Amino acid sequence: MNSTPTYFYHLDDVRGDDSLILFHRGEVLLLDDEFLFSSSVLQQLHDVKHPLLLVGQIAGQRILALNLAPEWEQGSLPVARATPRQLLLQRRFEDFTAIGRANQLVNWHETHRFCGACGAPTHPHENDRALVCSACERPYYPRINPCVIVLVRRGDTCLLARHNRGNASYSSCLAGFMEVGETPEETVRREVWEEVGIEVDNIRYVRSQSWPFPSQLMLGFFADYKSGEIQVDGHEIAEAHWYSRDSLPHTPSAGISVAGQLIELFLQGF
Ligand SMILES: [Zn+2]
Image (cartoon, rainbow, N blue to C red; front, side, top):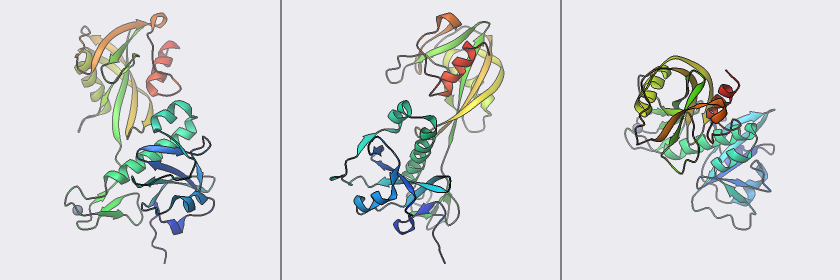
């Protein structure tokens, strides 16, 4: 009887037509600028300790993710490296879906090796994409963190903010994590109020995006201005203003993020 879990694979289970996405110390390995490796590369990796994680299947062929141990050395293997964020800027969207999904799974597996309740080691669930505590049997599924991102409109203008974090050189929509017990619409109201001190209504969902840095689900909304004057919190937001269509500041690309897509829809008169 084959007791191999559906979502976790050992070296012996890997087939010749499987493709691999390799991670090492938070970076994706590339060979000739290609991130999908033939499974034959396993013979050159030596001493693989982690299980391989099922990312998905394309036309019956499996894509597996492998997180190499920190002490792994590439030796003569001529690989280059890139962070998932760098790849986001360079790759086609379909490529990025696979890389993003693999990145989330690798992160989840790496951070759930022990049970948060009793501290015992976890092991792969037999049938589910889950890790199970070997002592108290609590299951740990990959976690997704929902966030809202909202474009607030007031007449022919929209509200864009420049964030304090990093070296933000562009302005974008307001965004924030959902809190326990909130609906997405309640998060929109709360975040806009907390970050810029205005009230909104007519909140409507537009589109969503997986944002695997490491595990957000971005829920994109439009909302209409209701009342108040802009008062930035000075903590998360450096500045925020109302912009008309012909005076937009530097904004994120619509090809990459749902924020850019919301702004693009605004420009189209949506
Ligand atoms: Zn436990």
